[in-house]
Every structure is written in structure tokens, then in C-alpha cells.
Image (cartoon, rainbow, N blue to C red; front, side):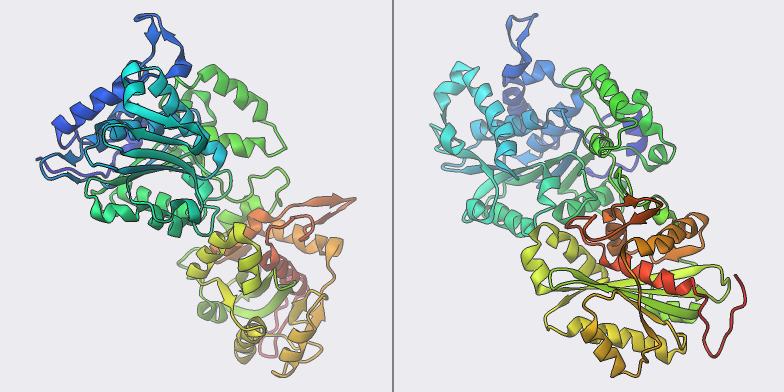
Length: 566
């Protein structure tokens, strides 16, 4: 057997020239040939009649080479002599309407038909009932379109189960939760629409439960099929996508994992080449078959100037453009410039310790709500080397209540915990004590002014004021910062300084998320960014940053240094 690698370091050239993203031939040609004969003979009911044969189109007649290459790579990775599958995991990232459901149904049906293990279990795991139906219905149609398959396979629609009458093996399509996958012993698992699982806090545990049977089934494998997310990637989707990219790019080596990712090279995105309809083929390999160029162009022309969020969805679903900060129609203007305002690593490594060395004076902003909110802290310092430039450093705390009440964001919160920018509070006063500890570090470094050093949201800060007073902070150093429309100056001032590069930050994922959550509401000549306007999304550390900006605009000074600039 020849050596092979699942990496594809030249993927950018390949994807531009419409070449396959799989750089090796099937490892076991006989296995690939046997299974591909079944796969290619499956009939796709919704394509109608092939005029050349007067029968329903088969996958082999209708599929483009990329799809057949993908299926053959997995079918051909099975060593029939040892019963071992050499490629055990894979990810296909492809735009909407590129036959993902057909791929899911066809691959799993093929394994059900050709499998040798008695009473084997195969599983298609979908995030919702609707997505489950998207895979189950094509599978049923393929069976009913073929008399031989109708005799071999028994369909039970009410429980989305297909049984091989000879081997008693089953293919089950489930809308996933912990209960539906518990106890499964599936040899092959296909996860559909992975991006939606990224929003589930328990998705990783669910996958482990669903794939646990592969430990004793060496012929098993797991496939992840997905489009891009219509929000910044999170949770298990973010982790799997990052890992797949590393393997594709050669940064990591794992020949048991095959990544096939149809996405624009970074250079094309930077040059806005993804906006040229002539390049839509990059993420739509089935263009001209299941995807219409005219339809894509018509949809694109409708959303070009859209202000209702449809542009974001089109880019994510039909062009596989990863959603970042500030792409929503009601986004804060400063979000547009947030990413470019990340401090260069040569200047600042993002740590608090270096922050204290780099600034000549610092102020703090604090914003906290109830127990189901984040408690946000911002430190804003004036750079010694260039007093016009401000450095912002943030941290947040979350009580257990947030994790229990906001299941939809738990996966993101865990990402921030791993980053070190979010602390989970097990004790009711942990956030107050740790905030006071951090502020004491700044005070001990001699960086706080004698007046207006700590800007507080006036609501619900009594306990923090008590804690800080006990640490030696004076009433003059702690000031209430008016909220609502009165923050307009700080909000607009931050926008300008982000754009001209004189407000820089640590590039924290926590703040990227909060900035992306910020929604703006005009009020006459003022603008509001409040928790009410932003809905249930968390923005507390950003509001803390605005509180700090209010104090920094007062041109603070310490006893050891006086800044006389503007």
C-alpha cells in the first residue's frame, strides 16, 4: 500500500483551478470499486428523469468528480483483509445546496447495503428534526426508486429507521440530544450541519457517546458535513474546523482525519474577490448541477445593499465566508475597525503585567448586572511612548447562574475560559474579590489618578464599592458614570480612535464576541448601546470599556507623571 497524506498544502491553487482537494487515490482500490458501484447506482428521485436513459438519475450520472472523490476516499480506506478503516474521521465544509443531504444519505445507505457485521448500527446525527428529515427523505427515495433495494431494506418512517433484512443492520437518523444517542454502538456516524451543534454546550459529550461504539469496531468512521455558521464559529464546530484547517495546511499531521474544505483563500477575501460572481464556484463545487449560477447572482444582487441581516446569511451559507465582528446591519460602527486595532505583538503581548509596564496612567471601567449577566472589567491606559495611544485590557466573570440559564452561549463561555479572559465564579463574592485584587495591582503600580480612577455603572455596585473602600480606594477615585445616551461621547470617541489606530486592544476572543454583539439604536443626535438594545447577547465588558473611556477623556494624571498633551 502506498504512503499517503490527508493534508493539502496547495489547496489554494487547487480550489482556484477547480481541481480535487484530495491528493491521493483510494488506498484499497478493490474496496473503493465495490462500494462505489453501489453508491453510484443509487437513484436521486428529485432530479427527475435522465433523458439519456428514460430513468431516474443515479448519483453516478449526476454527481461531479469532487463528490465521487470524497466518497471514494472513505470507501477506499477500508482494508478488507484486516477489517480496518484507515481514515477514521473527516470533515466536508461546502456551501448550501451542494448535495450535502444526498452525500449523507448515499454514503450511509451504501455502508448499510455492503456491510458485513450482523446487527450493526449506523447513525446520521442531525441537530434538529427538520435537518434529520433532510437526510432521511432522500435515503427513503433512493430505496423506493430501486426494486432490489426495496426488497433488501425495510423503512420505518415514524422512527426514521432503515433495516437491512439480511444482516439486520440498521441506519437510524436522529435529531440529536443526549438521550437519543445514549447507549448507541454505531460503527459509522455521520454528523450533519456541524455548525448548529457548535451552539450546543453538550455537543462534544454527545459526539463521544454517539461514536463510542467505534472502539470495538475497527471498520468504523465519523464524518462531519456542514456549511459555515451564520454567527462567529463556536464550540465543537469551531474546534473541529480549526483542527481540519491545521491538517489541511500541514500544520498538524493526522492521516486518519480527512479535511475537504471549500472556502475562499484569505487573500481572495482580503481583496474582496468573493464578491465577484465569477468566483462563486470556489465554495460551490456543484455549480451547474444542483446549484445555479444565475440563482446565486440573483440572490446576491438582492442582498448587496441589504440592511436586515440577509447579507450575513448569504455570505455564510452560499459563499462559506466565516462571520467575524461587525457584519450585522445594526452593528456598532466601531466593530468595523475592531479587528485592525489589535495591538502588534512587538508592542504588547496582551498580558496585564506588560500593560502595567507600558502605560503612564490607567483608569478602570466596570459594568455588572444580575447573577445571569457577565461582570465586566476594563483597564484603559495611556501609552508612555505615545500618550495619544490608549491600551485596553478586559476580563469578565460569570456566575454559575449564567451557565445554567444561558445554555445557548455556554460553549462560547467555555472558549473564553480556555482563553483566560472569563472566570467562572463558584463563590457569590468571587468576582468582587478578584476585581478588587486586580485594581489593587494597578494602584500598587502607582498608575491610578487620585480622582476619577474607577468608573462604575451606578446600578448594583454597592457591594463592590464596599470591597474597594476596604482596600483603601477613596470616594474620589470611584465615580458613577452616567449610562444610556450619556455614553454617546465615549462610544463615538472610541469609534474614531479605533479607526485611526490610537485605541488598541489585546485581541481577546471575549471582546471580539462582545463587540460583535453590540447593537446600536439612534436617539436623535445620540446613540445607545445598552443591554436592552442588544437583547440577550452579552456586552458587559464592552460597556465597561466605554466607562473607562469616559474617565480617560478627562486627561487623568498621577502624582508621578503629568501629561500636558491634548
